[in-house]
Each structure stands twice: as C-alpha cells, then as structure tokens.
Length: 396
Image (cartoon, rainbow, N blue to C red; front, side, top):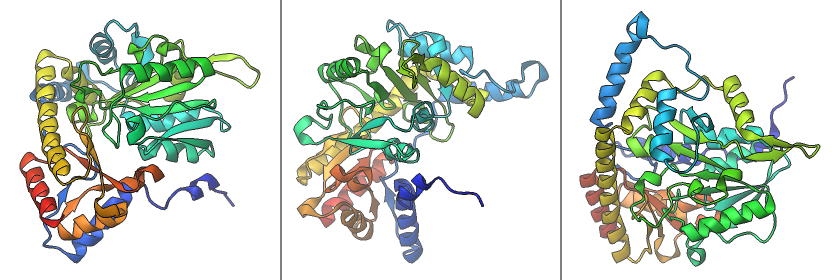
C-alpha cells in the first residue's frame, strides 16, 4: 500500500483562499439574492492593456502558421522576454539574462524553490505572511521560525538574534501592504551575508511603489547578488492573474552548502529543476509580457495601477475615519486594518459578509500575528468599492 507524505497532515484542511471561497459559496447558496462585493482574494478586475492584447493576438497568429509556430520553449524562457526584463527591471543592477527564469507566476516559484533545499534547513518566515511560504515548507517537514511583524517594527520584522538558514521577505508586503526602507533592507542583506543565510525576496508588487525612496529590488542593495533570490510576477503588474507569467532571478553568485561542505551554485540547480519539472509559460503569454515593456505597455499598465492605488486611497480614508488603523494602500494594493472592538478575524469576516455583503480576508489566515486584523484589496471596480465602503460605514 502506498503511504502519504504525512507532513501534509499537519496543514489546515483548506488553503486560506479556498476556505474563504467555500464560506462565500455557502453563504450565497443560503442567500441567493445577496449582492456580494468581493475584496478578499487579490484578483485583478481591469482588462489587459491594449498593447498586451495586440501582442497576444499576434502570437496567436504566429502559432497559426507552420513557419512561425512555437512548441516547447527554452527552459529559461524566451530570449526576447528575458532581454526585456534585464533592460527594464534590472538596468544598472548587473543582472544577466541567464539569471532570469520565466515561469507561470511567483506563487509557483516561491513554493517550488524549496525543491533546492534540504529538509533540515531552519526557515525564517514573517508573521503575518502569504500562506504559500509556510505551507510549502511544512509540506517538506522543515522547521519554521516565525518573525513577528507588527506596528512596532513597521510590519518589516526585527532582525533575528539567532542564525536562520533561509528567510522569506515580501515587499511591498502581502498581506499588510507595508513597504521596507532601503536602510532596513540593507540590514537584512547584511544579516544574510554575516550568517550565510539565503534570502527569498518576493517583489511581486513592486510596480505599485510610488515613493522614490523605497527600493523596487533587493539587488539595489550591495551584496544581495551573493545571498538573495528574487521573485516577480506580471499578475498584479499587468493583470496576468489568468494569463500566468512571472519570473525568478537566481544570480550565479548565490550558493548553498552540500553535506560535505562544498559550495553549490543555485542558478544551475534551479535550471536543472525547471528543465525537469516545468515546460515553461506559453509563447503567447510571454509575448504578452514582453509588450508590458513597450512604451505603450508601460503607460497603459501604469495607468491601471494608478487606478488601483486611487481605489486603495478611498479604502484607507474610510478605514481611518472608522478608527481601524489602516496600513498599506499607498505603495501597495492591500490595506491591512484592525478589526473593531477587539473582534476576532473570522468573526469580523462573518459579520461583514452577513451585515454588509462585503468579503474581506481575515488576518489570522496569514498567521497568529494577524489575529485581530483583516486585509482588503483595492482590485474591485471603483464604484463597487465606494459602495462597499458605504456599506461598511453603515454597519460599524
């Protein structure tokens, strides 16, 4: 008889957003006429940029002719996209094309990167946190050290006193919407270099940064190319949540130790892993991603993000007026706020669902430090968001 990986049994029965979807579905079944406004799952609502659509249409036409048809793509991703990424996202930072690995999104890569790690690594994860980081390491049976992020440290975590093998960081942060200063990120890189710690840096929301003092990439910090792997996504930058395309940067200078103490470069290992277990994002989606970097694509995607940030400002103002102490929303699409009157997170989720017909994400779903908080997203239609805010004001 086959035996299961028992580490899965230590996980919750449902992934956080699957649990939210199940609760909302049950409520909708019981209240079929309910008009729900969904501000929980961070899915975009605006259509793809016209420049992206035009490029994808042309890619479809390419696939309709034998002379321009594309089958399996290269393991790293197509050269045209990797070149555009290096020239636009990493200009002046010394990142090379063969350090870029195109994928179907940051969620996949932040979970799959653990394939390169031994099971006895001690993993540092901020709390609250995007659930994928914790769950995928628990699936391997790794020990996790939680780094509490709260108002006292600007939701960026205190530098640990002990040595950790790996630390996951995400800024702008999901779920809190907090950003990290250049000074604080420098301290994290210095910690990593001093302790031979590997940093996994998720910058999927960097396109929302509007403060010129906030770093967009960990590689803006000296020494990061020797200790950090960075993950990016077109999902929120360009609305690719359904199209699926992202990438991971693995500098050739990043390494880890083998059992016998040898240094092993992770760039080659990640290439080996990807060529074995992944066939690449589609040619069509990669041509669409390339168009994001065209002059028209840049202008169109920035305008869309500015629209989401404008919606976030509306949410922040209402939450501020309601005394909910909001965080984020100025350089991120997420607003993190306290539940009223000490209500626990799931109770407030149920309260807003039942009394206001508004779906948010309970903070405790992101970790124990998230209890008493909740997350709202700025991706809903502007008019629907305004309606949601009015409903919330009416019931608080």
